Figure 1 (cartoon, helix red, strand yellow):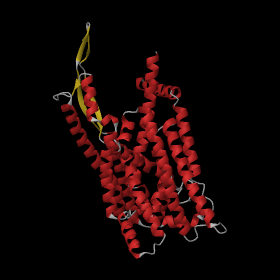
Figure 2 (figure 1 turned 180 degrees about the vertical axis):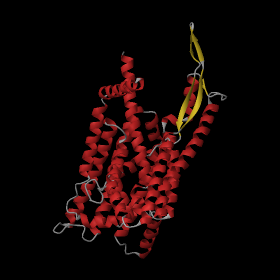
Figure 3 (figure 1 turned 90 degrees about the horizontal axis):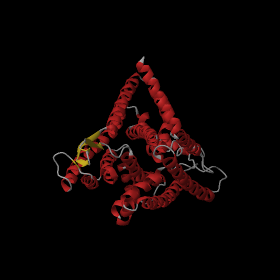
Figure 4 (figure 1 turned 90 degrees about the vertical axis):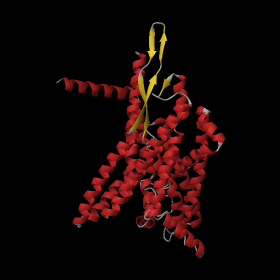
Length: 446
């Protein structure tokens, strides 16, 4: 009876916190933006013959993979066909540039909000450039594709109109993502990718049902594959939530007759500090050359030498090749280290200086440089373990689809599964953080 009362009290407190926190408005705003994104994904550009390109997408692994991340917008050749890709690629390049170029690094670390806005503005401008470049390549590929342009549509008008529409669509998607990040709940870019993947699941399920309906062995393989997917989800959650807690001892201070400090606490360092971002970045980096090479191949280059070079490069970046997954694994490990190096809460020197400032130490380690060296050793070790684990988990579902011969789920394989689980966990954690912050504010006002 007491347990039921306590449960009811907890639920009442959660409902009251939900209503008072303003979370309801943020969630409604987030879902409204997502609805706009899905609406734009259904609006085709002027003069396109959707069926021709859709047939090409169904027979092309690369286009099908890109179509999955755009929520079907690419297959429909909608105004949002480029999706969030240009913005993600631009963000990656800017984060790399912030490490290489001193002025950008200074703006990121020392100039506070003004520096952040400066980098954000440059990222937006570069996104426009990338969107225009990709839209031109896409428009040329459509122009060269027989039957892609509807009859009685002037080719020149189609080329110019499609390039402008695709560029504008990418800019709108970037704007929607930033609106979610600033005024909604969660990371806007990750959520739009999440929604795009979710939108494609019914199609994959339908294809799988058609494939295994009359094949008992494939039905057994499907059960094995689903079991592997569920086990992978558990591993992703464990990796996402795992943390290495470094013990900290605070110095005692006596003020008058009272003694402050002296307690033991810890600093939690996440095993996977980058969450899903290394995966998203790795996919964006791999898809950019693969997209260009795929479209160039469709243009039928007449020069034999160039055609051979493009064909070999296309094989290297093909999702069916071993080299693709080797590059993918290396990129995940590298980008996990890179992302960990730019996270403010994982800077050994700054943490060591703050600990020394407040009179706190790691047991058995001297303050200052020895503490920074010890933290650097710990962070390097756990980041390596997390990066390797993330890379291995990313390859498990892909290997499972090859073994079971159930290739219809390739779209929601390793990459998509990690993104789905990671973004969902981040979304839930942000809701919890928002509720806790409002509870603390209410407590301090009492």
